Image (cartoon, rainbow, N blue to C red; front, side, top):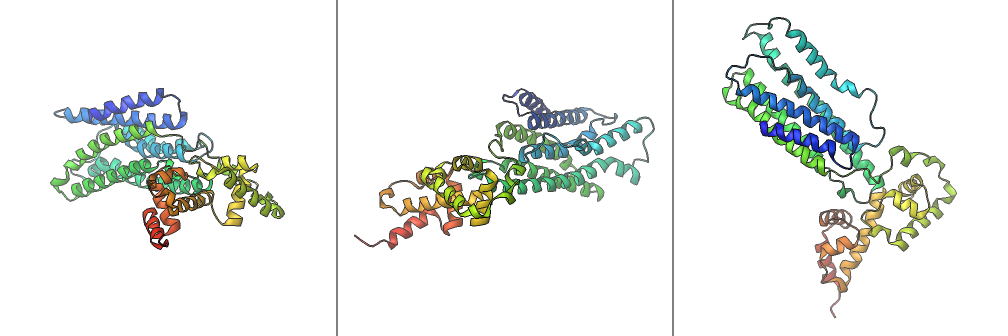
Length: 361
């Protein structure tokens, strides 16, 4: 636990002094690191005492972890103002609990050591954290779904935005919820064998601190080239219907003549700039005329190029990874997934089927 606390403090300093600073996201993660380090250090200190009789003043900190994780994910996944009015309300439970603990120190403890009130007061923070974390995990899941939907409207390579680490962190929080459920259930039924789960809980938190910092420091700007949602949708109704066919032809010609789809970093804004059209009009043309998102439109053309090369005997000795990279994909895994979705088989199976169907000689 002390090692986790030390790591949290080091990551707190690294996030504050990292260059370039991504102010809001870095600050939120830094605060999360600091509060987690304080909590871990205090719990470890209490466990070293032969007879800890003082009240745990750091207990309300656990009710700040889930809100901070949610605000951190929101700052990365949602474009818009740096903050929203009412964000401080996320910390109302922690502040209320801290105030109640402060008032409690002025009087004697309520209930006897075995009374229902005593048991409830002892495990109420765990119950509150459990309910709170479950609610915020659902909110984070909604953010991930929204981000995946919006990315397909503006990016041609959603694989480059590595969100698996966010899913890993939220999954780790879910694991902590499971440990608390086991601990509370075992305690309520008097099962002594589950008591070590409380220690495992804080050891797991210490390990998660390493995950937080490691992935947080390596996280690139998710929306560095993606426009805000309002910028994409504003003015769709202003697209002139009479010019749709000409604009679509112009858009497709720009992609084909410039081989723009072979650029793995191509974005909606980049395509719109090359075609001389506003981004919202490009989105309206693709959605309305072709029934495709920007992501689907670009990747379908990449797959057609890949199929042409896989069927060409001149590329027989070229590895599939090289073909994938030449066709605008950033990784073989992304290429295989998209190819399978559009062609109904893997690239290697397609190449083999084409060779089998080709006439001899």
